[in-house]
Length: 96
Image (cartoon, rainbow, N blue to C red; front, top):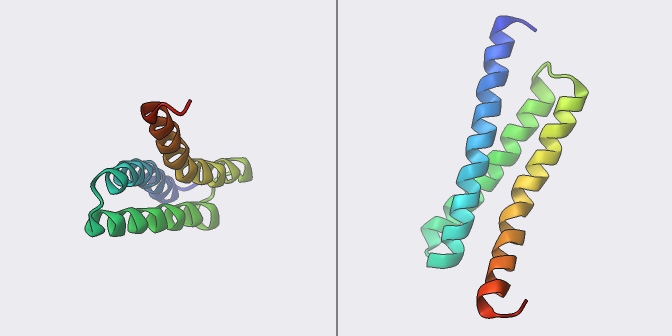
């Protein structure tokens, strides 16, 4: 891996994790505040997360195992807010 490829990969990985955090935050905000702009932001961050994951898998010189981990992480990052929100909603409504 060249130094330039390493830096580009590191930037993509940092953007991937940051975007996942933004998606989780906007997911929660979109369910609690019902504002259209937040829902649009949630959708955009979801698409950005998938696009960054695709770029990591298709462009970077990472070993295939790491690319598989990134793809699996993307699926997990998209599922975790939904599962967590449902759990907390049931918990606070007394439907355990």
